[in-house]
Image 1 (spheres, rainbow, N blue to C red):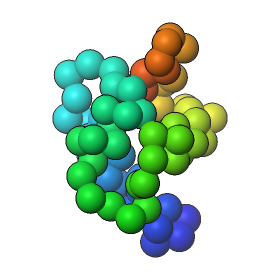
Image 2: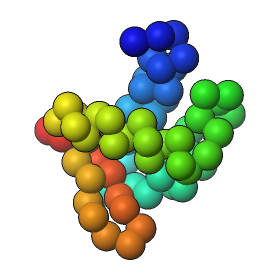
Image 3: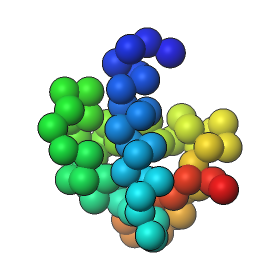
Image 4: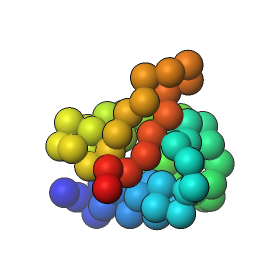
Length: 71
């Protein structure tokens, strides 16, 4: 994992860890604050989709999709 990927992972994971409920990619982006590596809801969703393949994140297929950490 490159430094940029780790920064994205760390920032997004922190937002999800603090959330009381599943969040949309747009909500995660807003809560992540300024970060060059996270520049759009699409980028957030792409990162979360990769983690979902590894079982780290649950994707709730709704409109819009929502995400939460697997516990």
